[in-house]
Image 1 (cartoon, rainbow, N blue to C red):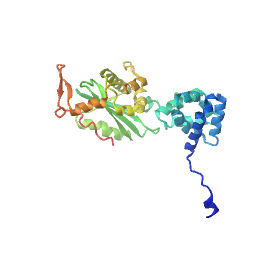
Image 2: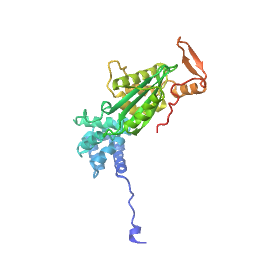
Image 3: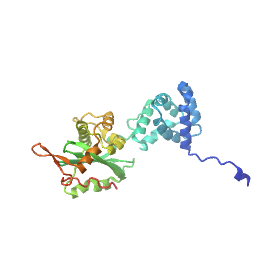
Length: 313
């Protein structure tokens, strides 16, 4: 066996994983709780020694986000200054400006930048700036609402959400289902998801951002009034909803609704899926013109949007 074969090979650990392990070792150490900010700064500087600012910025955000609240509170006192000492804030600004962060991480990054005196108002792409278009279709029994937003800085790609709103009891105008559109040019999304309603004899109407937010917040209020929890798919899409809908400016008649309200409706009330399952297997409640409610066999119920589950491909 040659000397080369006998040499111990160093493990090939990605730089980001190595840096994250170092950072977590610093702030999770038992001694960290007793360290002064200056001591913690020195320990962080040692942990990130030799790392490029870009690597530091993109690694510290998710590491911080996964830390316990008491650890985060201590780190808030030192992380902006630590990043500033190694050009990390400039790298952080670049990440925000390129739209490479999730909504949750972007909030953290903007907070650190603001704490360091950076002007963040024109830096982050707001929902108002990324908004592309919105559409609504209102029928007697149900409604559909679509929102599209630019998904990249070049504004040549978009994503979107489609909401199904049921006007029959027990929903009474609550959000029943939601679907996320794939990342494609906006024109393709409009052709596939908006124009198809016109082809079926149900053309959608274009609405502005204020009308979109008012319509969807009003529907969320109906989920609350009906005691029906938000659909599981919408809960999974919380980040997109908060960033692209709830962050839009309010109109004069937009009901008050916050991220905390969204979180509360995500965990309280009857399961939306259970209500829908009852309608599909047992009976649907229909409100007649005279206000009376009747139960209809699901096999006989005529749904205006029977192709709602169209595959999001």
